[in-house]
View 1: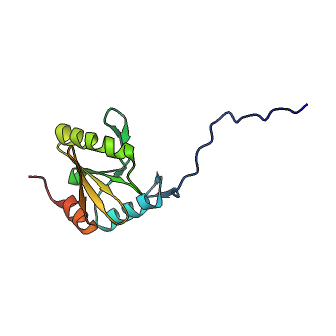
View 2 (view 1 turned 90 degrees about the vertical axis):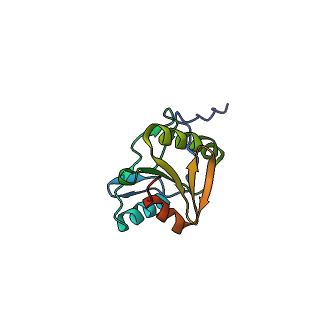
View 3 (view 1 turned 30 degrees about the horizontal axis):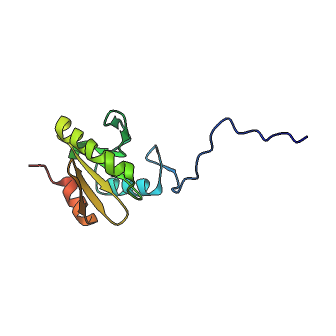
Amino acid sequence: MRTPRRTPLRPRRPPSRSTEGIYGGHWMRSQLEIAFARQLDARGIAWEYETERLQGGRYLVDFHLPALRCWVEVKGRLEARDRLLLPLVAAHLDGQRGERLFVYMRARAFRVTWRGFAPLTLAEFWQALEESEE
């Protein structure tokens, strides 16, 4: 009689498409996040990494830039969950704190508002970060 195979006690995690690493004393989920943190440091922009969950605890935004009063989510690609929740997070940040939300990707970026995603080039992204809201 054949003994049935045991299933692991822990569910298997799907393989990650990104390579995790440590930068500035923070464990980061991807090399793109590490590259972004390096760019912030090179530009002299103070940052905090994954400091709090927003939108009722449903979204953990990657970077908070307190001096610039904005948050940046670093993404390899936008998924349906991001398209749904990020405008809600942006509305919360704007309404409750007067802060802005951006998405940074390898070749493009977005300004996120309650209305949706406004595309930016990377040059426009870096310029928009340092512009104050009027």
